[in-house]
Amino acid sequence: MSAVRVGFIGLGSICRGRHAPGSQRIDGVETWRVERDFIDAIRTGAEYHPNFEDGMRYTQVVQAVHDSSAQGQAVQLD
Image 1 (cartoon, rainbow, N blue to C red):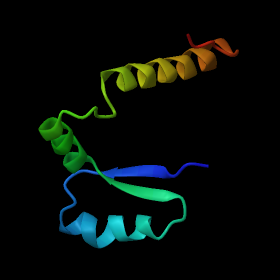
Image 2 (image 1 turned 60 degrees about the vertical axis):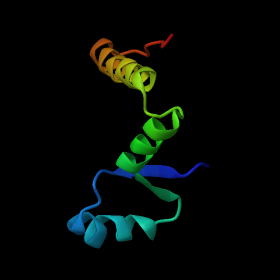
Image 3 (image 1 turned 90 degrees about the vertical axis):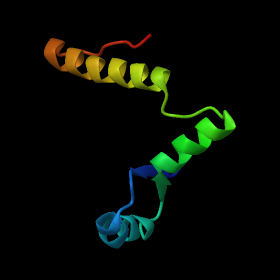
């Protein structure tokens, strides 16, 4: 199983002191410095995720969950 990525934006003193240390002690949880990865991607021209396509896919999944609940049946994703 791959690690769950928990993204932190800013990592200010509260986050560094409370949230980040606790999540680093959980097996299978990887912390992610969102803004650092984003800035590095801009500087180097590397591909960055999540991107627009990731966001669209997420929206499709959330809509399918809603539709499935409303219809009482499975909904196929394209």
